[in-house]
Length: 184
Ligand SMILES: Cc1cc2nc3c(=O)[nH]c(=O)nc-3n(C[C@H](O)[C@H](O)[C@H](O)COP(=O)(O)O)c2cc1C
Image 1 (tube, protein in one colour):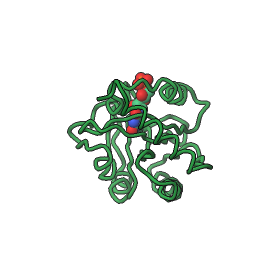
Image 2: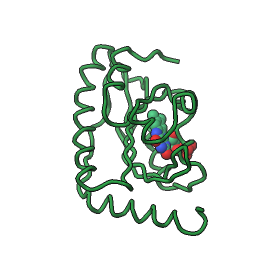
Image 3: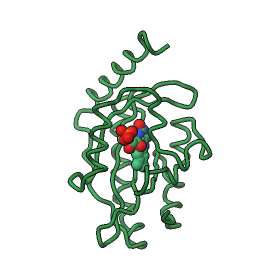
């Protein structure tokens, strides 16, 4: 497995938004998560490092979201992906995670790592989603020079959420459905 450049580790530790880094090989085991990720999901490093992040989904269906993610992972056509996906905290509490993913590549185009950021859009307010979007956007642009030092580039730009009111409202509906029968 690839070593993570020290600047990238420092960057993750300093960030205020949830970030995760996975290997581009095998079943994309997680290699690095930061404190906002641990706070959001309730999982510690020893629970998640070395495992695929789908563990957060438990037995939720998430068919559409997973298809989108797999299309992103399996082909070079999509520079990034953004989708809401039902996840569960370690304590079993469900939330709708607005997941952003992109690829970290070497200058020769080889995918070295997968980068992701998570946000609980179901227990949020539209203003908080807009603030998160702005922070993620800043994170991506500031990450570029950090990565360049290690001979890498981050693919894709962020499609910001045009309608944060509708996105939050939809996520709250999804969560309300989960609280219905079948999800005690
Ligand atoms: C770096 C990284 C972070 C991810 N973060 C999450 C996450 O927070 N929640 C989630 O449900 N899936 C996350 N995923 C996606 C799943 O790991 C997996 O790729 C997805 O479920 C599609 O594959 P599957 O259908 O085989 O499960 C992440 C993937 C990667 C590579």
